[in-house]
Each structure stands twice: as structure tokens, then as C-alpha cells.
Image (cartoon, rainbow, N blue to C red; front, side):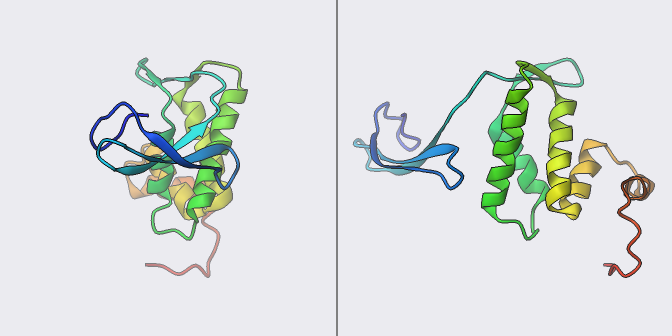
Length: 158
């Protein structure tokens, strides 16, 4: 594994253990060249996934991008990092289980929406506002009404 600090092509594994959800191996590494320490994760990858974008472009699936999207939607929400990692792993397994190597971005978005709705409604609406390209407050109102999320008269405002 290449050292992220000095670029040395060789590093040493100091410790290996399963991650919290058991879906990955966490390895603590050190570089014999610069002494830097870093962590890597090793996961099973069943197949190489390619995402078909709306504009027709094809891009390799990026697990980190999925994690970042969820992190943005869940920012300042009472969700633990372990829950986010479990959601990411679950979504990746769903994508891999489709049996296709090329997956439309809308399918990924739908899986994310479903996962967020089950965890945090505020994050769900945040993600939906970007995914469904809301342009005005009326878009929010329609979405909340369609989803049955606007019927709480006791909800605080602000």
C-alpha cells in the first residue's frame, strides 16, 4: 500500500481487525520510509459497478462519494457514524445484488432516498431537495405533502 505522506510504495501492516459491521478489515499501517501512520479498509467487491448519469456519461461507482452524499444530508442530525457506514454498506450490497454492472444514477438515488427516509426525515428532505432539483419553496411544500410529512400541526417552526 502506497504511503499517503511520502509516496513510498511499501508500507507495513501493524494491526488488522474487522470493522464494526464486519463488512471490512481495518488495517493500521506504518511507512518504514517516513514513519507515517495511516489506516486502510479492505472490502469485498463482487463486481465493478458503473453509474450511468442522466447526461449519458458513464463513471465508476465511488463508495466515498456515496458516503459524502449521506454525510451532507445527515449533517448536524443525531445519526452515529456507524449508522452511516451501515447504510452505505447496505446500499452497496443492494446495488451489487441487482446483477448489473451498469446502473442508472436514478437507481442509486432511489436507494439513498429509501435509506434516509427510514433513518431521518430531515435528512431525507434535504437529500430530496437536491436529488429532485427543487427550485422554489413550493417544490418543498408539494414534496412534503406527497410524502405525508406536512401533517404535524404541533411541529415547531424555525
